[in-house]
Length: 265
Image (tube, rainbow, N blue to C red; front, side, top):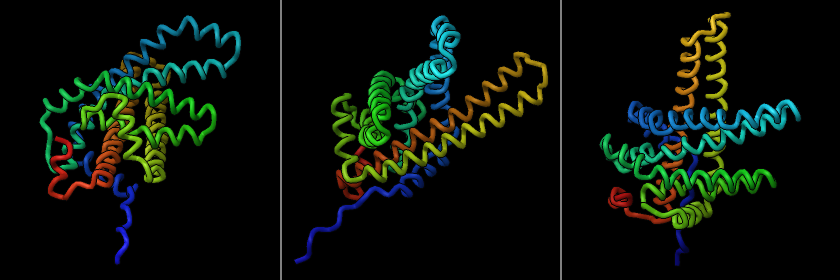
């Protein structure tokens, strides 16, 4: 008597391929969704938090040196980064629609972005807190937490799950596939590093070309450059997480091929 069929595992290369397919198929809209709902709120939050923290940051710098200042600024930027995650609902919705062979309407995507903004903000805050605590203890717990929790965001959008159910769902879906999820996260980190290097190189070239002319035009040029690279990275991150979630559902929920289109309805 034949034994049970081997359990299908998440394939990181397939996830990356699906991510590239979703982004290439709908790049202008995904870029717009990300820019409007994630990048702009992120930059506004970063500006506001830095402005509010300035009275605290300057004494820290003067009294304790550069390291506490760096920690303070990293904390501020991490808090501002939550706004980037919160606005990911539109891209998640569009990507999941693409994976099931459909193209969601512009209004549908924007509505999803608005509808799930606060739940995704809460999800991002919890995710960042748990991962940062994990990395503060040891690197391994932080990485493990990321693999367990990362699919909760798409679960909020696709299944309209509350936070508790979304994290439980993510833990269930990620079980037995966390090494593959970690490989996807590492690929994203490499993309983030490459984009950061490219952004700094282009911005540096713009500043160097301006010489001593520190005009408003220069500031705008650098700001636009940084925001474009930031948007691209966030867009790929969101589409990639949606691809992870879609693949995990296909593996764990095991829907028939002709039922895949109904999974996210």
